[in-house]
Length: 308
Image 1 (cartoon, rainbow, N blue to C red):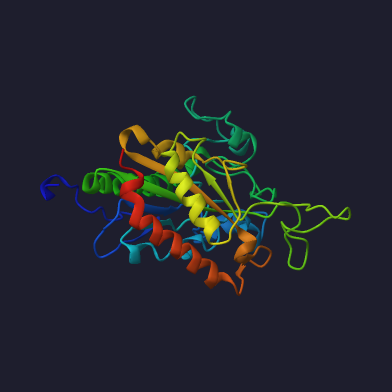
Image 2: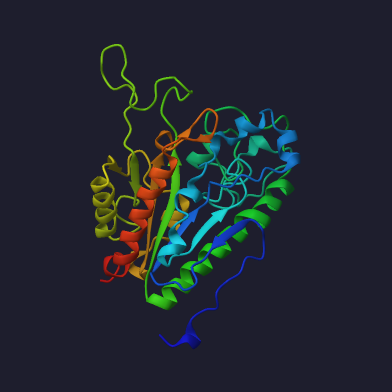
């Protein structure tokens, strides 16, 4: 493609997003981690009923590190630097719970989505483990600030990177990188997702990975099949779309007819981290190496997988 029609490489105009780029992008792959941010504003921590560790329950902790090899294989990696509990980049910009605010919300706010009802809107009411975050109610101006200074810069950068990749290669495959908590007890030394209950049945059985393609609408089926097979070959268990079929990012950017494909990958946290202490486990490096193998395989095949 004529270089004159390729959009210039975008640069962040905000510290809300970190972008790790290869010296030269050689594959139509983009990796993004919207929930691994861990810069907690002091005022936010002070306003919370939770201690700093409690606030981190909603993080996809260390996921950006698990995918750190992406630039080595010619693909950019984006990571939000702000935490999900502060502002959730994997929501619509205005999914807000009216009960959290002292003033009335504008009529165009989405106040009735299932995410809002669950307490996990753009500005979350609770952390992932269910505890209430705030000591007191917020103002709508607080939400406006977070959306304009955090949500919007993340999506501006993600959208520009996808557009630039499509301009360069004619297609783009976005991998939206997440982690999933252990169902049930997840304390150090307590039963994990593969624990057995008194009857001998696996009480909290979850796969190692869940692939979300919005039930086949966000990316070409062969993309999902390829990732599923690659992970299975590495010895992992994989499930599709259950219980995570893909959030806002996957569904918003995944438009196969426009040659933009998006696949959400959820990795079980207890594979690589202690969920109570929020610390890397000794096998963290091995899991990161396996994900590096997946990245390398995708980098080689991304053009073919999205060429139809």
